[in-house]
Image (cartoon, rainbow, N blue to C red; front, side, top):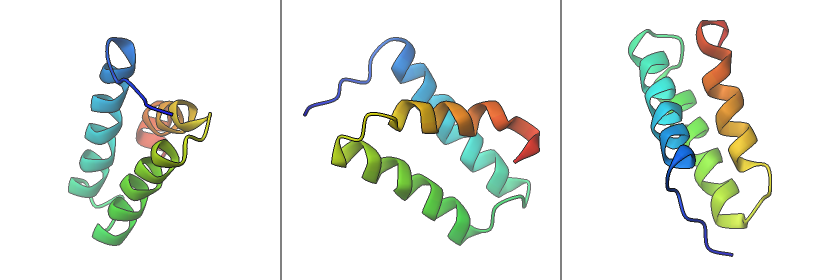
Amino acid sequence: MRNNLIGDDRVLLDRYIESVLLRFSDNKYNLGEATEELARAFIQVAAGEPDWLDHMRGVVEAGDDA
């Protein structure tokens, strides 16, 4: 399965990456946690898991609660 990250999905991807990096810079995630979170998302996409967008959306929506 090939995924096309365009439009709203691309915006979500950008916001997801920004969320993880901001949590790292705010010391809410250490380097290992940030790396693990990003890797988890890439693995979900590569495996064709149907809920990868929901995972990214959940991380973004958690905001400061993460």
